Length: 306
View 1 (tube, rainbow, N blue to C red):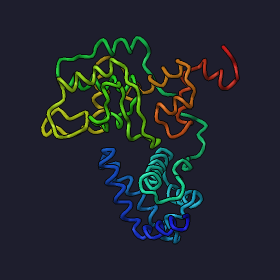
View 2: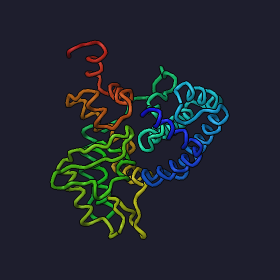
View 3: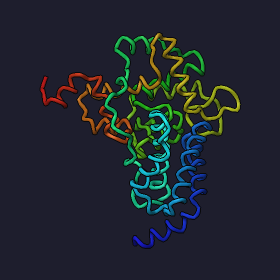
View 4: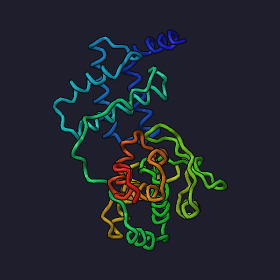
């Protein structure tokens, strides 16, 4: 069976350039990836294609050693922030090859990591209780824009959804009777069905009844003006950011997601449970929230019971 699988992989490897084009189309249609980001992805994958062609490496026989060699050569003159972005581009493509196209025998994406960072950036920022009260007390419901923002803020705060996940939601993903919502595309490539709090269900319903324009599009959130197309990730971020700024809260849309994670920590969930609910592709992404929960951090690091 293994030989047959690799025979198929070898046959398709001749068309790696077409596979890259297919991936870019997939990214655009599935994730509404911006044209700027698509250009960046194309740049990285074109370089990878040239590298494997130069070394006569077949797609099905890619190894982490090969990818490390490529990255060491390709990233040598870039600063760390750019290197991190390029590694992320490569991880996305490797996830696609394994999960969507079945073109590699194992998923190499989780093995693509950067050098250890001993001087971490500041921990995630989250909203304090008084800021949350100010936010929800100040939300308006007087226009289509208000209703749309109201629903998006609830999704970001009560479910910890990323702007991309909010923009990708479709009408078919919402189950009102069961009070559940399906997230089909996450960073960890694991679709998940989440329970939705009553206030969030009501916020979505209010938007559908009074704020969403009539359209053949199945995406939940649409633009406010004709031709009423799906919102992009950036537009979702801008709408939530603008709302927070009006309330005098100096955080981005991700501040609501970080607040959700903080609430899960304080509710006593394990790091693994939080990782799954947040859709993280690595437990390391979840561990950063320990920096904002001092009590739990001491319990984990020093085995203290406080």
